[in-house]
Length: 220
Ligand code: SF4
Image (cartoon, rainbow, N blue to C red; front, side):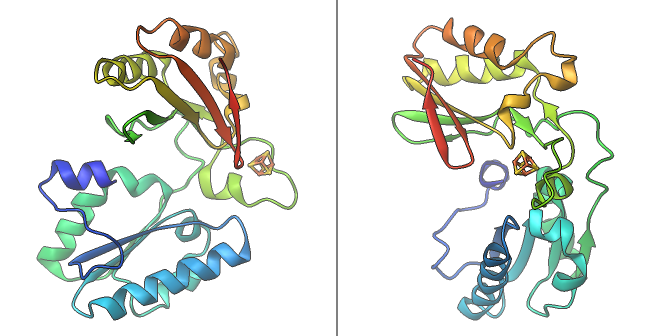
């Protein structure tokens, strides 16, 4: 989302700074995460009472009834709306109409490409390769917030990492909601290990990390 705003000419500032638009990418993995999301949304409006407050993501997806009632929020955007965030913000700038856009998270059978989006520092890049989870563990809300397993097209992953490698980045962190399920929606003809082996062939990439549930493993 940061990249999309940058591409549209917006300046990105620290969350604690006075800004025109605040985007809170909400989490709902625990009740504490829900509470923190609500606190951030209210706090942003206090920093600048004239700002536009946008609630996005997982908590919005599963708690529409709660978030609709928070008066500080101008736009509620569900999981599938992130890629169109700039469009929705600019519509709001024109109309000033508060809006809620929440799609059926189970509707889209394929991974939704976000464009070339990568979080990088000087040494490593975080690459999302997968979304959703099919496990439906009884205590977990994630499948309802993120939908079923959708794997990113391997060509797209390899293309993005190849471009990053040319900039001198040597390490990539492969991430997703349940990356062990990568390829399940390709009938397992191409799995996570196949993706890692293809990434391993890219010139310049020296280390691959796998990140899920706060745990990180090194591939080499
Ligand atoms: S495997 Fe993990 S993300 Fe998936 S439902 Fe279970 S706890 Fe949630």
